[in-house]
Image 1: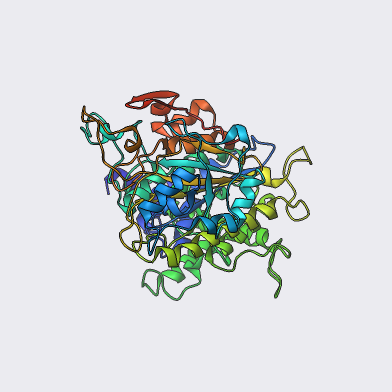
Image 2 (image 1 turned 120 degrees about the horizontal axis):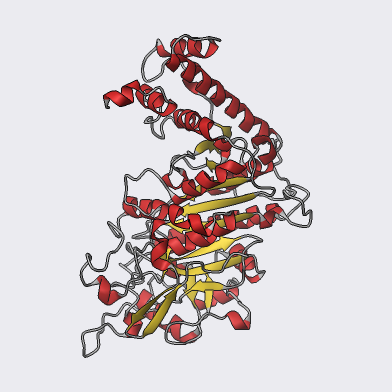
Length: 522
């Protein structure tokens, strides 16, 4: 710590000195206190007349893309089945997909075409009937082969110089790729693109503290340069325990000191005044959240939203809490919000067939319950001047994960990969469509006479690990533009987007366009 930091009377410096800003997820009330300290300087007037929210659903562990969005056209399924093992392997039987039914049915003009000009057809895992229903009703889209990229990249380039052809840091590493997905930087970064959107959206929220809200603990995705995440649990507001506990940081005297600081109406010292003000606002914020949630209080045995039963697992409870916070948005004085929920357990090196279905069903059912609730104006009327607009058109849910996984089986599961397929759900989504480029179903390494990979092998980097043909930056930029981020500000939120501004990549099979915006939002 420098002498200038010690002399800085600002809230951030004070919170750092008291240890609150570095308390970590073990003390979420302390992180909330730090967020409040910073947020006070950025409270602004409302620039928006409507309401918009993004909800990120993060699959921790790396989702197996091939058993989530399954190729079901005859040729592709035959390759998938051969690679994944038809007997005692990890392939999903085609009959299970058609019987569920979870075959995805885009309109004829929107049938996806791969880089060889072949029409492709997909279905979802049989446990994802609710998600398939949303897609076929035009309320969900699938974005194919998304992953972190620095610049467009072919497999030949990937195998060449990393200096000439840069790629994301620490590929295939859980912690690093979670961070790269959420922030475009490796583990240790402090700011995510959800938080950066919050930075720009804060001016629309008189109570800017509630711009970025997490129901899943601390995550870099929601941390901005100005906007810091406010955490809640599935039970409600996290109490400011510093003045309630018998000890703080193991010190029995500190709670009494904190109580005296907060109760002192005119402390003499600048730092005491700051702490008094920050803690008082923290308690006020806790009351605001509790008041907002009281609008949808649980009354046993009914849920907060009778008739819309959310799954009773952790993800279902997280989504229900987000729904309650959205219903209380007027109390929170929020017009632009970014939420995060999550589900773990996807690192299935083994037991893929046994454990993956329940995870996908949880995701499918929770997102569908959330969407259907938002679509019911009796529970959640929309915000804005047009009463015909439903809240389902003002809230967009999207998925993310560490990475995809290998197409090949390691015997009972799959290993760490790169690109994956993702879902976007909401009334503002141009649904019943696929976006991005269908990847070849291949695990081969065959090259031509010039030593270049054959076209069908160009878009994986071994064992069917997809080489992304759509970057996270393109995916995020499309969401950010809908959220209200101006094109001139996009590089502030997503610095690498300048490398995907309608760039064409030439490769052995032709050319591939990387549009800045993918078109899945209305």
